[in-house]
Length: 159
Ligand code: PNS
Image (cartoon, rainbow, N blue to C red; front, top):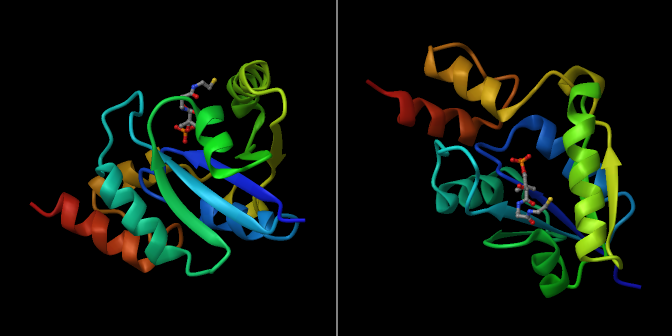
C-alpha cells in the first residue's frame, strides 16, 4: 500500500522543526507531499517559489516531494492522492487553531485524516515567525534552520 501524506504550511521559511516533522512522518507513510500555501494570511517574507526551492534544498529524500498549492487544502490532498494531513503541535497555544482546522478539513474531506505530531523537545519553541524576527535583527539562527535558509535570510535582510 502506498500511503501518501500532505504536510501543508506557509514555510516562511522552513525551520528545523518542520524538517523534524517530515522525518518523523516518514516513519509511517511512504511518501510526503509538502504543500506550500501560495496565499498566506500574512505578507510572506519569501515568495512561494523561494519557499518551495528552500524546502527542496533542505530535504533531499526521494520520498519527499514539494509542491505549492492555491485554494483548499483538502482539494490539494485529493489531487495528490493523500489520505493523511500532517500538522505539528508544539504547545497548548497551537491547539485551538489546529483543532478548528482539522474539523473543518474533516467536514470538507471526510476521507482524509489529520495526524498531529509533536516535534523534538528542543524544537518546540521554534516558529518561522520567530526565526524571521531574530534574523531581521541580525541574531544567530544557525541552530534553528538549515544553512541554505540561513543564507537566504542573510540575503533578505542585507542592508
Ligand atoms: O503554516 P501555517 O500558516 O500554519 O499553515 C496554514 C495552512 C496553509 C495549512 C492553512 O492556512 C491552509 O490549509 N490553507 C489553505 C486554505 C484552506 O484549505 N483553508 C481551510 C482549512 S481550515
